[in-house]
Amino acid sequence: MRWLIVLAMMIIPGIVSLLYLRSAPHKPIDSIAVLPFLNASGDSDAEMLCDRITASLTLSLAKLPNLRVASRDAVMRYKSLQSDVRTVGHELGVRAVVQGSIERREDSYYIRAELNDAGSNELIWSQQYPLEADHVAAAVNEIIKDIADHIRFH
Picture 1 (tube, helix red, strand yellow):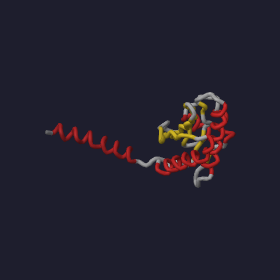
Picture 2 (cartoon, rainbow, N blue to C red; picture 1 turned 60 degrees about the vertical axis):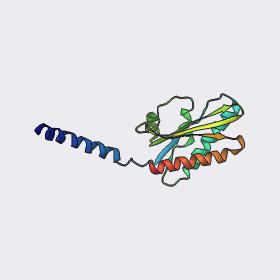
Picture 3 (cartoon, one colour; picture 1 turned 90 degrees about the vertical axis):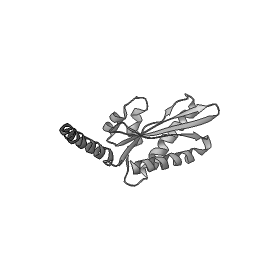
Picture 4 (cartoon, rainbow, N blue to C red; picture 1 turned 180 degrees about the vertical axis):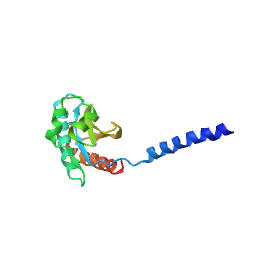
């Protein structure tokens, strides 16, 4: 019977610590970088869309209150580099990184976007969106809304 008490005294603090760590609030995301979106199709139209969407996301996120956004110039060096999210976060001094790509399938384009915690390299959110070339602004607005929702609740 004593061994059960000793065992419980050893296990209970561990469980309490684990529950506390899991319920501890995340540090708020107050800074972000939008990496250049990748052209997963290789065609020139997709390349232009990548540049346009990256610029639009950067400008739109910069309008959100209490959010510092790395400049487009600061992130352009990552266009041709494969960099780890933690490295990018450290080098740019941001808490989160947006990455994405555009892919063409038959006559349609699709945007894949994801939000990653730069400290833990944890995927916070990921989504794929259909894209019509003449409705880029609508797609960007939807992505911004989703990112803003996940920043607020992370």
